[in-house]
Image (cartoon, rainbow, N blue to C red):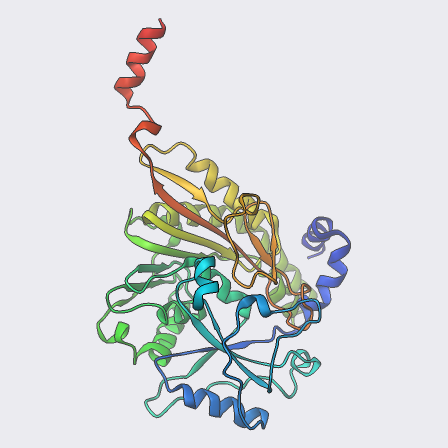
Length: 383
């Protein structure tokens, strides 16, 4: 346990002392609205819990998040936010909206007392109206830039929050494949599909596919328009909280096991890139603080695909290029190849940690590479 913490302390320096209390605290959740259920039910459920008379229906852009004072603009206790719609968002490249509720960012939320959004209750059709999720976990979904007719693969989909978010953006002209190698986790994923998406046209038209394949060995070249890989990772926030509940021996075992993820992540990312179509997009994300599970994995993938004949792998999220605006930009921090959402950025929001990097697979022009025959002719001329 201590060696992993020492590595992270060395990487984050003085900031580590501010990060640790945030990692030990519960992450405040937002309620991702499920458009396939009655949204009135969602509003009533949350209103009832918080004893408020209504909720604010303003549509706010991600830029309105203000980490300087740890607050969101609000009129009443409940905010309905829609991210990814309107002219401003279109310029950022987010074509589809996601709506979610959030309560005031107050000390009460951090302590888990009053003000927490309640667990959802099913509507009259048995569909749950919202999913409680860390707001930063929606960033990889928004970064996918899903179009309604896309074929999308969620490569490591459990527990299902990102799957539910992606499903809000698709029509039956597209499809959603959700994968989870663990049969037990896949079973829970299927339960989430039934609870949230069984009333959706996507479900009714049999356009949601459930898979139990090993993502490190996935082979379906050029099949999907969008691939989301939220890879298995150290998830240090979870480890910090579990460590308080476990014996020292079990806690040490949990931290020791977190060192084995990098090779798995590299294998999965390589398969994700192979699987996406030319002109498609891959989002790689983790819940890890470790650069070895984030930028290092991205660097390995870039090297692996650095000299392809039929496509060029572009890292569109690279901050130095200045061509990519991350979702929730006021909360995002640049790394070498991607973006991080850290819980101390706005302590009362306490989102993340989430890392994301975005790849696009582009067709190479014929002039950009030569065939073997052309190479031989050039060698003869030189000789």
